[in-house]
Image 1: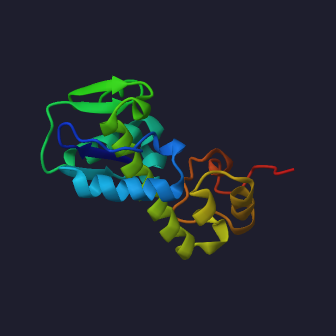
Image 2: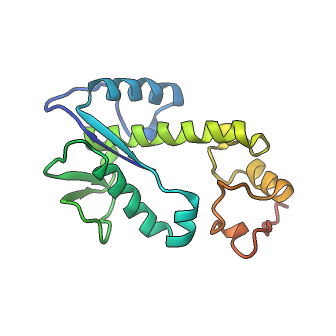
Length: 174
């Protein structure tokens, strides 16, 4: 999951910061404010099948590309959080820890995180045994136990280490 956002010049968004440093309720408040005040934004979603087929590096590049190309207007320069993404066909400047240094990057981070969390909440209702509402798809002990007992769903990445060989849970939880 990635997101691209175009903000008006000189916009102030107090409290917008690295999405990982905000509580879920505060992220939702910021999300609403960013969507209301931005010029444009677009998500970049990559499916589990695409990740399994292409790998994580190519999928990150694809998510960035989809987010950027989904914008109705194209900025002259994209600010991207982190190290350079090889092969990304965008005019970009890379900023390590950018979500704590750039309002645009922090805003895109919040949009991506809230959108992904909403996807995982829907997945929780479709596949309730996996506790997606709490773990958001991360490999918590409870989630790994559900995978061991129930097996993978169509939204699980089969390239995820415990499932990689043949879809059978290989992780020992003891």
